[in-house]
Image (cartoon, rainbow, N blue to C red; front, side):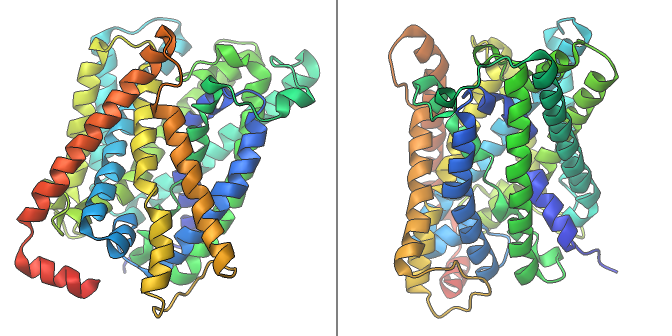
Amino acid sequence: MQKKFHLMDAVMAVICVVFVAEAAAPVAAVGNSQYFWWIFLLAAFLLPYGLIASELGTTYEGEGGIYDWVSKAFGKRWGGRVSWYYWINFPLWMASLALMFPDTISLLTGKTMGTIPALLIELCFVWIVVVISFFPVCDSAWILNGAAVIKILIALTLGILGIYGAVHNGMANEYTLRSLLPSFDLDSLSYISVIIFNCLGFEIVCTFAKDMDQPKKQIPQAIIAGGLVIAVIYIFMAFGIGVAVPTDQINMSTGLLESIQLLTGRPTGIIVTVVAVAFLLTLFGNMISWSLGVNNVASYAANRGDMPQVFGIRRGKHDMPVGASIMNGVVASLILIIAPFIPNQELFWCFFALNLVMFLLAYVPVFPAFLKLRRIDADRPRPFRVPGNQTAVRVIAVVPCILLVISIIFTAVPMSFDAETLSGVLPITVGAVICIIIGEFIVRADRKEMKKGDEALWQEEL
């Protein structure tokens, strides 16, 4: 009997995919105004994006996801760009998470790890994820569920310890009405993109549709339920870090674990060790949950001539996208091998921010695509529709799109020209430009390789 991805599995997958614990420290670097930004972006971005993803995901079923949505609205070239941006963020993200393993181990042991042992640990993480992604989502449901539960427990632990620490030891950051108001400091605004990143990923659940009992009903339910849970645990977790660590001293890579150490008053111990191990396990959950969606989109695009053909290779009885999985491992491994030669103290943030920029770029066309599909494909049945009249729906689509563009600018474009800003931001700018240029070459080259029969099939699908 074929395994099914039930509603609870879908809800837990939403939590596992959208809630990423490693992003808590960069967000906490915003300071106390993070609470304002969380609430504002949950209302102005997560809610409208979740509604739009629910409509598009239930209206246009299949593995194509955002590639399909954008291609149907604006043509294959834009679909190719989106699939490239959507895919390239994944090995960048995987490499940034791999860098956290030796950092976390060093923090626990108090000993700095050598370059070669650290690289071997990082490569093991990458290729374990690659191998697991060769299997279908229902076979990995226990991993997604387990990772989601662990993330919630970490958030609860950090939040409860934060409350205890605030009552008995005071707070590391001063909490005043003024400090809770939105901060427009340029350094803080560069981290707002992390909050938006933490709100993305609902469309991944849409790629699980073929494994669900009732996808048209379960997808909106999972997105709404998962979104509400995520909103609560994000804010609770942010409070714990804010109590423990002064904003200007937060380490982007190990800030979460350092918060636990400070709140418990011990550099090691049962609680610290358990949270550290649990945190590292959640990194596997992040990668596995995302790989299932990213690889399917890349393979789907490759089979339609919009990604290199290696991404279209599928194997096994479940027809899994092993080509995209292997390419994830190859690119992430190359990044990790050259990482020691990059003169940047915050390597995690460097690669993580570049992943953010490319990832957010992939979503920018989704919102105008939603509006255009409503217009050019109005007769298609929509099991779930974004509520509201035409003006309200347009606002729901335009506002998050604008927020995406603004967050990309603050993350990838230097807002001042002092040495510290340039050394931190310029590598992200250069990396993003290189990725975009490579994508343009791929989009143009692979369109020429598409077979006439496939082109006819694509036109028929449109």
